[in-house]
Length: 268
Image (cartoon, rainbow, N blue to C red; front, side):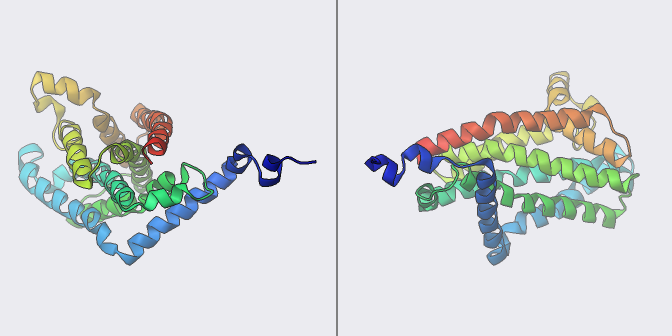
């Protein structure tokens, strides 16, 4: 004779979800995020406008001083802006996550028989569209201004690399979204962290022009490694910086993804 627990199913049996099911649940949540973008395309405004503003402004300000001409500065600038815009776009993940949590959306998701990581992973995967738009816009603006990469294939791989790294970084901002109480706080603290990372690097100017203490930081800055990798790929070279950037992204996901899910479950 079966026990009552056997008839209704034990909690452990009910909660066991396979990897394939987790992937399916995450893809469903990602589709939800894409539908939100479809019905509210204004969410893409920053990743459309920032590449234009950054490229035109920085090329006009620094082009003559660093390379002599705007066109000569573009091979240095475009990879830097590519990284800056994509990394800045990853902040939106934490902001949207906090907004949904404040509205109680994730409380309803938690009551569903789905993988615990699905709502978080789905939201982060949907943001890949934002990174794609940011990279495409940066490249198009650069081409319109006269940027000509040595390797089109290398530039394409560089864009994929930037998107992967941005996805990895979005787990950090997702954790901040879970921990903090207001979307404005998430955005403010995130930008405070990103400003020195993106500007104290080789993204816009040569590191050699910086003060000694700043050079030391810029040389170990992960953003500098990623920008160097993008420049090498656009030039048709495949150096060690590519592997360093990928390993760094993998390390961030390995540490931050389970940590974010754990904190998310505790907070909800």
